[in-house]
Image 1 (cartoon, rainbow, N blue to C red):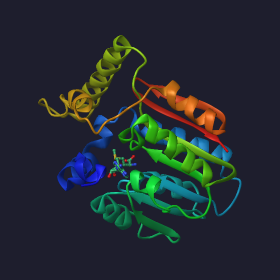
Image 2 (cartoon, rainbow, N blue to C red):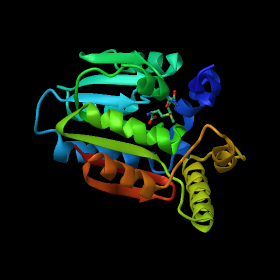
Image 3 (cartoon, helix red, strand yellow):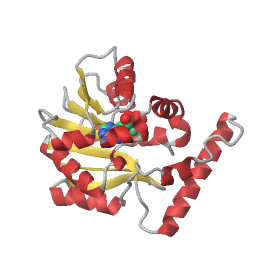
Length: 240
Ligand SMILES: C[S@@+](CC[C@H](N)C(=O)[O-])C[C@H]1O[C@@H](n2cnc3c(N)ncnc32)[C@H](O)[C@@H]1O
């Protein structure tokens, strides 16, 4: 069985739960998307016909948000889940130049799956399923498939540098879920165990932001920085 098939994402019910509720339990999900769109508008949009790579695309939300500001995009969306790719394909059915690839990140590292070069490679809430060594290799693979001047952005969960900070970040996450539930009028203890589940599941392998930024710098990325952070949720990236 592949690493992906052992993970919860291979389960259709689990991915459905994520699609239905991500806006409630992903801290500031709308803000994360706004940061990505602002980055795209500022650094990438001035060129037309950009080639976009969406890694761990889920139901296609990242590419859809980019298409809303740039209809000239050609996009390649990759995910290891058939279920997610079907949802993404339905969601993006009205757009041209959209290509789907079913592959796990591990397969991307082992086989020759990525072809051509991209202007923007983006991933949201997926790369934390790789170990730090795999992350490093994956960043190298991404770098090798960016045009000179192309950008990489990762929106993801990070490991805090100390246990004390990690505990506070988990508390902030719970506070955010409580606030969201109150504003949506959701009652009961639904979602109250998200932080426990996040910490317990061993297919979550977050690494510190510093380790990931340093890995990008070592590979040769420029303008490497964290563009936004709220507890364990961060947006970072760099330019080739
Ligand atoms: C939390 S969802 C994020 C989906 C979407 N990017 C978003 O922001 O809503 C994580 C996605 O990563 C995919 N995924 C998880 N592990 C993966 C792996 N090892 N290789 C490829 N895709 C993976 C899952 O199938 C799922 O679609």
